[in-house]
Length: 300
Image (cartoon, rainbow, N blue to C red; front, side):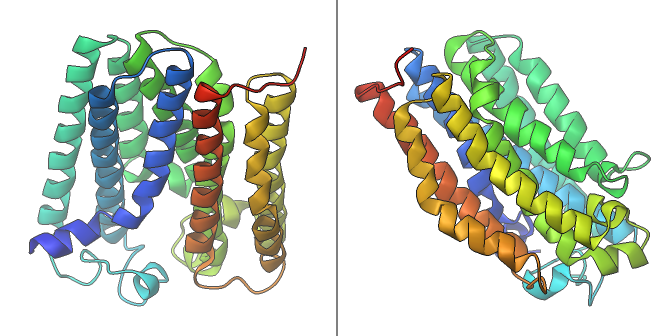
């Protein structure tokens, strides 16, 4: 398998979510007065390797379990080297192992120069990543996929990025990163709602399959609304600056997406959700960056 195919197998377009989670935790550390560019870049690189490893391992096990194959929904909107036989499964697995090794190397170094607790975050993340699709657990096949990615991208990664910069744990990045985590879960939920018929036919019990189409569509709308509501709540309790209200610029797009999920689900449901997630995250993070130089919070 050539480098281009190997790179595509990591699904690089999805790394915007990791960028958002790492940068979110780092910005909150900067607000607390601690920021090191080199540590940020190493954390980001390590977490991108982690995300890539998760994606590749997911493809490996989905093909092994007979879920992903020629004609499966996922093969219609992206290149899938494992499903199309462009590389043997042993090669796909080897790429994943190398990427996990890079993640672990970055994590161990960061633990040495910042906080030993970073090792616990890395260990928990790798465990969740592997068990997401690996035998015998296969979390995503037991309606736990959305919860798993929410915990990793909404809690573990922001908390770990904050700890790398500050050397200590804080609840603030966890609370502030909740909207980011919800959006990551929404991208997966959108994917699973679109594929609900196929997943049910191959005995993959995703959350969408477990809830059914109508309830899954309602959940999508509820989580979408919750992402914006949490920002408002953060502003009112002075966890977030007033500037964070700028995320409501994307509310019309969110409303349109929610309406779309009440009808026929398009093939690009998850990339459209991911696009909104990235717009939301950029505005959200810009508001935090602005607050470093021009803090503005609601009065007590």
